[in-house]
Length: 380
Ligand code: MG
Image 1: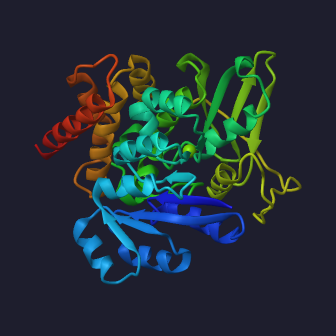
Image 2: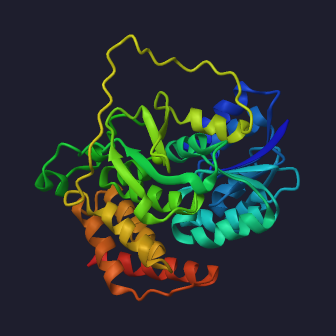
């Protein structure tokens, strides 16, 4: 039986992780849960999964929960770290949103935990440091993202040196067919209506700008130690081919399946095994058209910004990420038009000086500074 801590258990990936845990009670056991401030849902989860410790980011909400639930309640970033490093936890699912996930993930790796990584911002902002640390600590980083899970599944049993190219598939998001003009003024509701995936608010907006795909390019670079020139993105509106790997003999492997995040979550937790599941089967008797095309980076510049910042290295990806986090938050609160997300990122990438080999403190300082500056820029 595998003991699991879930950071961000009340979010989209967190709740789906618990659905999986509930389906396999002989295989998985929950020892720690965390939320930002959704204590009502957390209370339900505590009753169902009986964790040893829970953490609530918001201090007031943490105090409120203490009077409601019979469990150890901790708070703040230290609380998050406590749950990430619990003695009993073997695997930590990092499903918090944003750069707040970086430090608890590093602490979990330091404590020798295997990571089921759903927090993209960790590898975007601190990919080199995190992967070096994981190697030194000999812990496993299993991707929860559908694309990276697909790549992992294509590479299992292959020689790493024989991988020549990764092709990340991308649904194209809700604005694939929109004109540039219409994208500029897209509403929150439009941005949140993703054609194939049901996800949390922030990542759904990231999918609409294609920033999400950009993050995934950077994640792939670090997870699979491959250069940016060897990572391509293909628009694939059906979200059935979850990604592909090309080998040096030009053979290509793809991983297919229905678009349901529970599949990559289950694989991340069951690996190296596969557990029997009852997801709907793909029906190839129906006419299934699988289409692929190139992304239009003139309409979706955020994807190019990701390649640019990734190639620049240093703190540039952290600058991009921090600007995006603030701008998406403003957009979701309907304070800025959609086009300001890409403009904020561009402005911050042009305004801040890069630091070539930053340590984790420099990365986190940059993250704070850029967020502050982005708020000032957008409040004007
Ligand atoms: Mg993905």
